Length: 432
Image 1 (cartoon, rainbow, N blue to C red):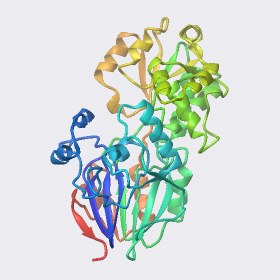
Image 2: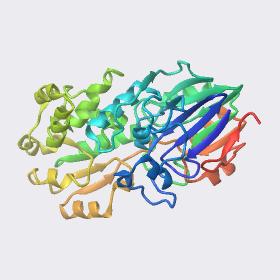
Image 3: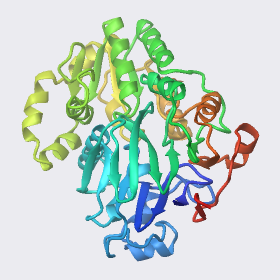
Image 4: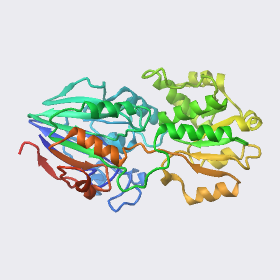
């Protein structure tokens, strides 16, 4: 089995791994980079108006023969670990004959993003996989493992071929609402792992104030009990753990959780995967209609859902009249001022900021301060803490551990055993 990490050996985001065995080739993940090679934020606008050859020449797309839509198919399948753009966002360029393997929930969220999010991958040739259900792609035998991550229905993969066993961790953690999956993995790990590709996103970062999703929920509950005005929650609608935390805090404090159409649609679609996910018509949930979301649903042929969601619609006068009972979901710094202008007397309101702090710009902080709003950062990472990475690597006990999805590959040898640091594009033969 040959391994090539096309992107991810020295950076976070844009992961892309190629495996070869016999006459077969597969990829694991194919995402948009989060940063450039010199660690500057990646500008997705660079993709606009560029063809595949231009993007390959600029080093944006890796030069993988048989992958792209303008080439003869040479890749037998692509495994997608989860529905974050830095792991699937380049699928828009892939030959449509190549099957895409992913969990049901991940596929649903990608479909939802095609409706609402500017970066779209279009219709994919998807094959739904299931936890611990083995499948074959050519000479490869693949077993998906459900993992705890901020992305819903995320997977790790055990891949076997030519007598070798490679484990791809994907993005994972041990402190979310599915932490039991981590415990199960380390208590009964796959055996005889020749190569472990393990993420290290949290290495080199400061410890978070909130260690677990339960701690985030508890703090949201405390804020809602202290309420004197409206409370805003900045969080991703696709971070289902965070939506659940917010909803549980609202139930405990008899607060009204105001979501938007986009969020209502996500929750509605994901009930196919789990009936425990909150729904727009559950107790203490109301839906704020946003014009752009309504138009997106109408364009996608879901006009009937607008009538359905209308049953739980909440208007701005009702929100202003019940401010001290409202937890209102928000996401976009640029759109928030328009929303705030429609709320009567929001001075003294609190923002629970529950997203990556890189989105929390100084400009946004200054705007909120000028409007008399206070921001409190309440977040826990979607990635494993260093001590959990140690536990995971020890349990896996691989013959070789390769860093991926990390800015700190050179710190791995000081923390883990049997480390081999690769460079992007470097090929190694696991059989040699």
